[in-house]
Image (cartoon, rainbow, N blue to C red; front, side):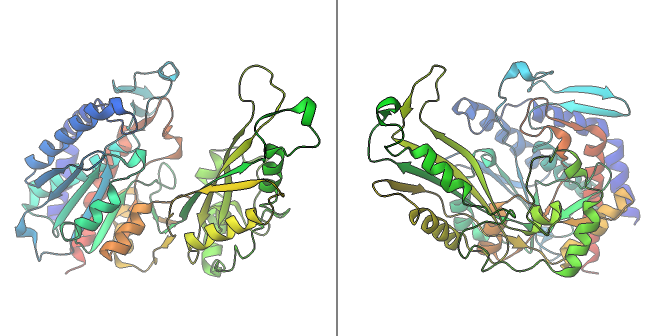
Length: 464
């Protein structure tokens, strides 16, 4: 325990230095989805390489067809000490959007005292530079005190997560030996509340579909052909409305065939959380539809979902144009639960649409492979170690929660590397993630670094 206290004391003593360096990282405009952001991406990769090299890691900046990845390994002296650990984070950020919507410049980090909290406003402050910075600083302080880690450490930092991670699958496949480990920590998730930590043990799968309905005619004057010719917007709208029944269930034949009931014990736990959900309180749910028989959290975490994300067609301009459009397009996303295969869901969706297309019209589909849902047992020893570690810092139990979101990386790590993936982080829904005035608070940054020290201590104890 004395060595851990030394680590924590060092983290506390170097709090201002840690914050100052974090500000430097936030100043770099590492926007991955904008070609103009390439210089910022390169600058951030070089900055992080120097940081990790200065900590004694063997670091490579790996060039890809997209943006570079940073791969770092600890010393060979750590071999055999304990579990091989892989830490993942991403250093790229979302575009700024409309800069006049920001109170503070997005790449000139600004510290603002707001009541008892000091917040730092900058793009990437929450999502997700704070997350990788937390474990990097913990590893630095741990190594300075111990001279080693509880086991071999690999760090993988991605530069195109916010633009789709196009280069990541091939990288993981070709670098399996470099990434070999016993557990992966995916550090890009959230807390349950500002004072209660969480581990995400269930992730939904994700499938995107784009459907375009074509009429047998080009654009036509509605005064001449309205009421008699096919109108793709009307037809497609009808098809989209038929995708759900009146009880909020997806109406596609066979959609629920592979869906298992939520276990009774898990439902009871989630129902207790529903009564005081910090996440649900952050949004106005009026007008929404919850599948009959389920609480909102059960529906978000444990039930599959189909959402219509966009629909376009015909006149989108500022002026009037009385037209029967030649086509209409909708974008659909499916959030899948354990047991559902993306390819099966895609085929059933496409069959549903094809069977309902009027004579003379035709339909086109586009969509990627998608990802499967993942579930981690609460009894997993790494889940338990992380939970205990965070409880020691936050002095309250760690919530084991689900997620309505998807992290395809977790499926890639699980399938290709054959490892457990622990998803955790310290983001809050109120951090204005992806929005103007994104922020993070300095106390949470400090306590997240301390949390990782306790987690490493728990992992170290696993071999004793």
